[in-house]
Length: 165
Image (tube, rainbow, N blue to C red; front, side, top):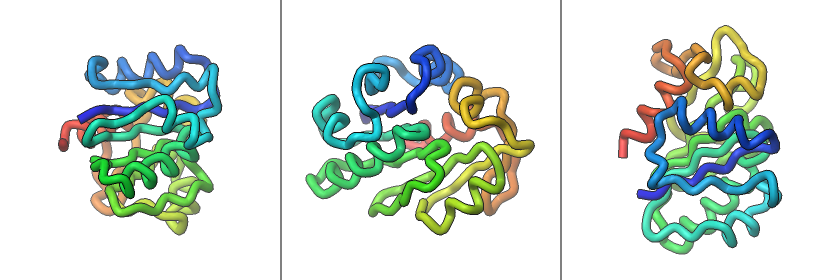
């Protein structure tokens, strides 16, 4: 399984911090160059990355826009989308025939995004944190897993989702 990371529009150091704090296997990761190309563009994502047979996608903020569109295209082409983990993709419709998890920086963002899709386990920060903290410091963000009310860090939640495969 390959892992595609679609960051938002922020300094590259934030993505480096995210990858290290979630303990992702670097040899399986492709990080979209959001400092040079528009991460909200599925066309650019499709040109950058061609999954072989299965892919897990982690996307943040504007990266969620391009990631969901690319995932839907790959799914129609027969590529297995292991799961899409949408981190603070507020306002982005997330519908697909594959597992889609939402992670939000606060309860309001979580609640107001649910009507826009996401069909798997979700997480929201409690107490609330600012948007970028969720990406560059997921290990410092405590929160709640929706439906179970279990508490853990965002980094642990994401790590568990990656390890499920």
